[in-house]
Length: 201
Picture 1 (cartoon, rainbow, N blue to C red):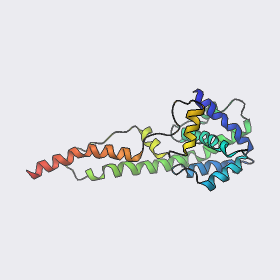
Picture 2: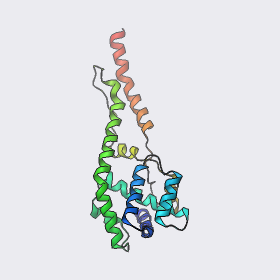
Picture 3: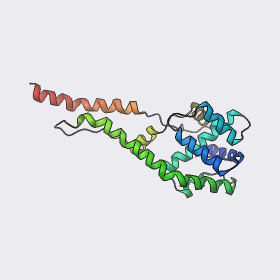
Picture 4: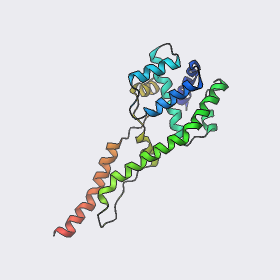
């Protein structure tokens, strides 16, 4: 996609990072704050590590990295898949370091997402366990559930990609857990009414 290609040009700005450890810190900080967004101290720290000239340059770079992380974790991109997204003139050293770090954390991040995902269905259907009826589950594509586990992130990320580069979709999903819960609740009304009618008359 043209919008993605423009977004990944932001990887050139990683050339200001002085060491692999610094780049690793940037990625782990983005992962740690994936649900909450970056705090002002985090933003200040990452801006310093990236050696950017102005604070306005930070959000696009972080949006680019978050996009790559989601592809590795949620879409099961391989190293070869990710390499195809890199700008062709990105330094080979930087490409190698990024791939190495994504591979290093991919399994750990997937395990964390899997644990979080397992907590969702149990809370949605736990009140149906005692019903003597076939529970009706609201089906959601796995990608929709995974997207709900990713934060809305910092709004400037979305505005940057959507408005300045014309990407057709925002980087974050519009679905959220409360929306899912409300749908599930509506679907659960039927069995409860049937149970009352069976024993209350």
